[in-house]
Length: 406
Image 1 (cartoon, one colour):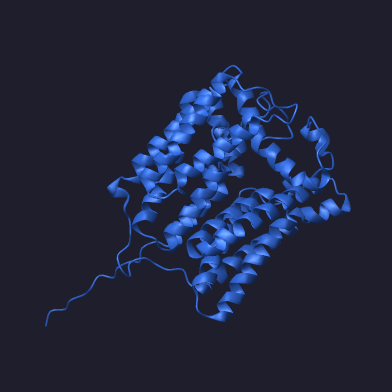
Image 2 (cartoon, rainbow, N blue to C red):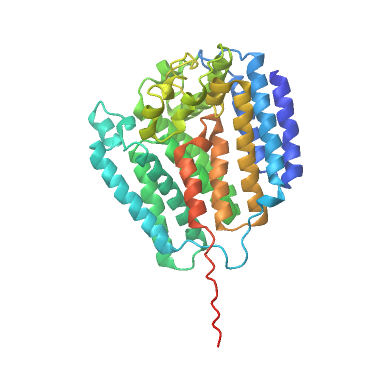
């Protein structure tokens, strides 16, 4: 079955080019991401990685095919063409970007006071508190979205504005937000921001992107390892590698484990009896303050069900929750939704290559790339990102003209 999965994936790559007229598109990115997961897993460098069952690859194929099907459908639906007429779409000003950054800063000051410190300080001082103890539930997710939207807007303005003082402000905003999330030791936020910034850069400065892509990936992997080692000092015990990892290459080992343990966890999940957890499990995507009202322990049922090979690696892909809730039908539903949103954003970009369509597309591509990790399409910070962008670039109200009779 692994050969069938690889073969169908390779066939979809030229098919995606035929549909989109370019090699790099949402469908090809999805195919490459999950093909990389499958191929890297074949190395099985850790004792935690068993040989996947045929049923595992059947589930992966179902997700792949439904993503591709709905991507193609929504890529070409004419009614989704929402390109604005000249002067009809609202633009985002530099003042609004500065306001968003100050609102985010004020919110984080409140969170620091509420949490009584920062994760990096707790780690350096040997406190028992971790990054999970930082932030106000739901409020934290909302302002993570504001931070990501703000750096995207600042980046776009940085490369398109003509005034030097605006460049300075935008560079400070981007640098300050990224540095803050380093202080939070939040790898997920740093990776999400890096992916979205690179997508926007690819549209605005394609030559720069080609030159910077590989060095940035290497630096990112090394930093990923540094942060991982910073957060835990027992990588050998956690990863259970069959050979002793080389210390200075720890970033590559961390990335390998986070990518491949997704497949290990999916394999464990499909080998269990159906969990049939239904809606309560999906309540983990509700705002944190509402979860206890829906189901006190629902958000943790999957992790307590034995579906994780190791509690140290919780990445299990974007459809694992839906599989646990509804079986293969759940996989088809969420894969189709991913394909539909990807096709929708691609369709809008195809018809209107403006600031709004590029920034929305960047968020969607980030969701696809990180689909091996978790379901970021239904992750509140990403949902809020899309809503904030759509609101900021909403259509202007047209004032009705008044005619007075003589």
